[in-house]
Image (cartoon, rainbow, N blue to C red; front, top):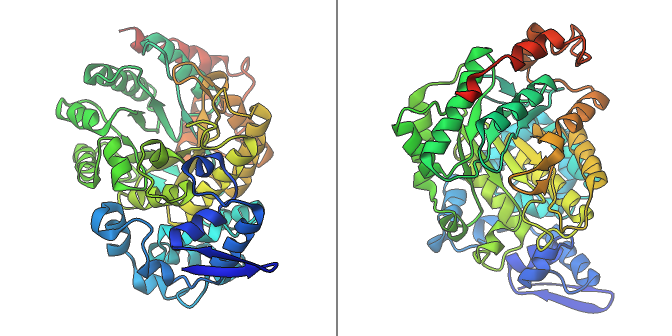
Length: 464
């Protein structure tokens, strides 16, 4: 039992997970789950309780039982006590204060990552303002690599997301070429297939790989199919670069996705066996989103942001190239409006970075949410300042297959321009060599870059 008295009223919380839930900024998913604070006064009271909790509390009280959840076992069994020693004496509130000091620089945060439980990181985020989340996340750089290097200072990578409602190769190829001409594609050229057939996955993988090899593009490809399909594609000698999977923060939620830790290990081992990398061996691509455990009926009474952060412990175990919080994709039932989406985006990026993950964010919303592209512009800018590793490049910011709104190639160009950010270095060199960027690293006028455009548009591999 945890309790405090605020303005003459006693507020009691039966366990740690109820403190965490009540302390969370308002969001529709927690209200739907019945775990949100009943009032702003109770929310403030929970934050007082949370601020005074020793960080060591999280080592002795699990929010999801150790005996029945393999994610909890992963979190506890891999905890680095030596790394944790640096902050073991602190309360959650004290941890927040330390994170905002100059002592907590990038090196210190990197050395600390393996000593932090996701619940500790979720807890401290609940005490932080948006500017705190930005300031701390910006200090923590996480670098990953496959055919190029992502996450270096002053860099922002972009995933080309060339989805098509019928998986039409020509339509997909046109979207890819549009993205390349706008300097995007260094994070990954990643297709969400409309079909779940292995045959379609292999066709799309070969489409991207033919294009990549034809122009010697230093990037990686991915067809975001279920991991079991990708393993089957590898067994059929498909050109798989990255293994994709959506993940969640509880064993039961992952079971609803048809996965467990064993199948993730099998997928990673299969990708590594192909040895298709050049500059690094990070072969996994994970996507997450607040509310996924609740939508699967697998939240165990834990708030959605804490469970999201537990998903990052799963990702951390597999040394991914990319971790993407698809922040507003599940809908207003979980994140109601632009304000809630913005807060969740900053929380997810902060928590992932603190745990040592190469975090990106799909700045997005569904058409029935109380949000619009102005909200996305603001969130994109905040994440750029916070040092996000990558964002999405969707033609026209409108995904015509998944039917949601994201960020466009031109949105990515905007944030690179105003914050003076560059693509991944190997990819930037390629863009300059092809004439898409000028010698100063700026996107050339399309008329001046017509030679590059003609070379790309002359490609006919997609029609085969």
